Length: 448
Image (tube, rainbow, N blue to C red):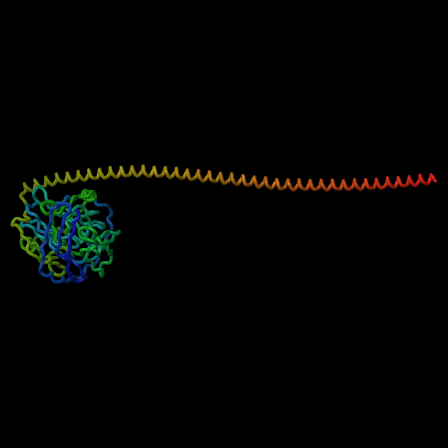
């Protein structure tokens, strides 16, 4: 369920810090056509409260074993819807490792009475509180008690504020053996509490990144039925509901019993605006650390409002509740099965897509490698051809040099031979002439 709020802000001064709260809101449930019109308060807010000094911090030891105790919430049924949640400021945490438990209307022989919101110590380190809630079933209203567990379960989509915005809890978280507080939605005095962080919660308590700090929202206090909150358990909340739980502590039970004994907390007495709306310490309803609800117009309370129904009618409603729970569990299981099937299908599709992508990537890599190999082979062939061409050119050049030298040598030898032959011929011719001349001269001599 998504709830949108239109805020009208006024400043309320708290002794430890200043906050801005919505004193009027138009709450629109997106899953229903119901519109809840809150009362518009004209009276001024109550005077600031002076808180007693914080008790010494509590040191926790980690549990030796996981939770094994089973816990079935008590169901009380009444005919009339509980009054709207009163508007009040959350008192600051008294010390480290205290968990905020929001206030809630309970049922008794005299009708509805308010159990103030308070800070309590969890029974074990690591546990979180799932608030109780009123739910509409079989024409009546049944109360489902809160419980402790390792995760927050379903509480009807009721917006209790201070981190309990209708689903889950945004007021803090366990980190090892230390509880860390979210100052965006929790009232913390950092002088004595140091384990803090700030994280704006975008849900029913934070609209458009505007944090509604340390106050409950004037909202319906029940789930389902005419004007009730519209919510169905998520798979995670179903898992939390079916897990082992720890019931309210003795301190919490005593806190409820003491609230039942205070007439001023009866809705018929306070008209929906209890003078003790929240306390710093569980079971302490007087003195310092008490926060009153903000003043406002009286809420009309029916004479029988909040009085338990006869046993036979309660048994009928409990049976109807069991049937509805079974149907809810079945629907949740079917949703979970559908989600698992969708997740499996998505996983298979993703696996097929991944495989196809891997195969394509492998093919692309192979093609790239082949292209690179082909290119390398072509480059090598070109290089080899270039080398062969260069070698051939070099050999041709060398052969030409040799041939040119041989030709030159041959020409030189031929020239030398010609010159020698010419010289020998000239010498022979000269010798022949000389001989001829000599013979001629001899012949002339002899003739004389």
